[in-house]
Image 1 (tube, one colour):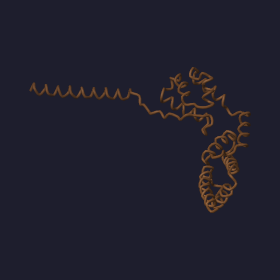
Image 2 (image 1 turned 30 degrees about the vertical axis):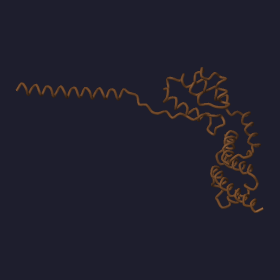
Image 3 (image 1 turned 60 degrees about the horizontal axis):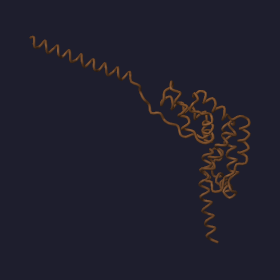
Image 4 (image 1 turned 90 degrees about the horizontal axis):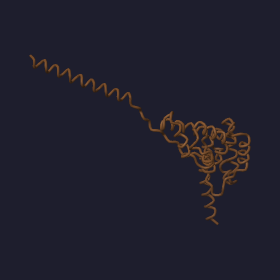
Length: 219
């Protein structure tokens, strides 16, 4: 009888120990922090298509996960590693790594805000912009769109798209421009986005180049 009581007591002790172990595991799990992988933004230039404000929003989301909201001292140094070109030079001149992030952000945004003078500069650059010799359609269209985003930041999307398309077409060589316009007759040109116009131009350019090569070989 005593043996059975001892066995019962041991079972109760074992169960109690298991329950305590489970409680410890639950406490450890609830007390531990869940770590998410912080997606690091790409290197940023002030000439990129993405605005400085949008880049900083992505950067801040990254830093909040990487360093924590309370450790903004690390944010300023991290920002310098992701900048290049004119904005990197400005960061260096500001001694950015030694400036509190909230103040650094204010200084950088102020330095590169699109005010009336900068907007006028962008407009003039847009007006005289041309496709460089040997420049691909892709490279030229990207360069043109980046500048247009700055020059016409207050335009509605429809007006912006029309302005961009008109400038793009005007910068094409005459033979290519005529061929693209002929191709647009077969398309619903009004519904084509700028990206689709660029893709169409690339296809037409291949055809035009092939025809020119054939004509040369016939001579």
